[in-house]
Image (cartoon, rainbow, N blue to C red; front, side):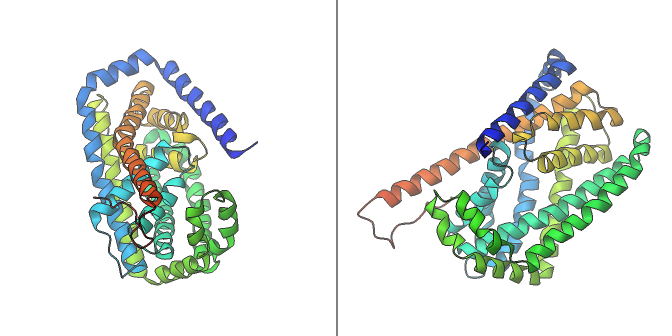
Length: 345
């Protein structure tokens, strides 16, 4: 069974689960909740730019070390980050396609392949750390809820068991020449796409750039703090959405709900779009926090609405960039030095 077929099967199961949960909690009730909240929910779309900007500031910190010769301004990085998120959230790419696209777009902006790849790889590694800290904070907030006290031991063991795995991954990146070792595997996956061959041939350089980035400990700490601030600010989306849906919760409880949403979407990455599992996670945790099933599903659908409205324009821009570059490269009268990718303006 090939990967695409497996993805379709898992996605179909997730879609059926999501539809089943909507039907179980009452489709009409959920629709009424969304209708009553109305257009105010659309404010979540522009508000999402705030945590995105914090993420971009962390990435820009890393790029300052990865490639000192060229600078990509914050607006350009924000556009690339938006495309990365849209690809990961809206396309069945197992949360890695966006990172590959991010590397490619940086290269189109003139950043060398090895520094571009190193910045994205290290940013992804730091995301694990910041997300772990965010999830730990959310679970600790959850322990203050009386109904969750009997889960305390499970929460502690989960955090303790996860820590060695994260540190092992970070040590592999630092000392294991990971990119060079997996280069052949990536090359087989992307054998049909010649645009990645120059980068794959620099796998040793990418590992060198990764180790150089690891030496900039102050920059790493700064980028991690930017990311953690982004995760925390994203909880404001959940807090506002629940207020507008008529079921206000405290900020710590909103943070716990956001923690579950992010954990499910990132750790159950084999399910495209987190269909079904996101709704199930919010229903389960919402029951502990006094959030009804219909409200939890309405919250999940609201988040999906924001992802679609925020992400689809980014995907269209990405499509235009790739189409424009393909047309430029196809023009026979241009010399190699004149050919270049479109600029993100």
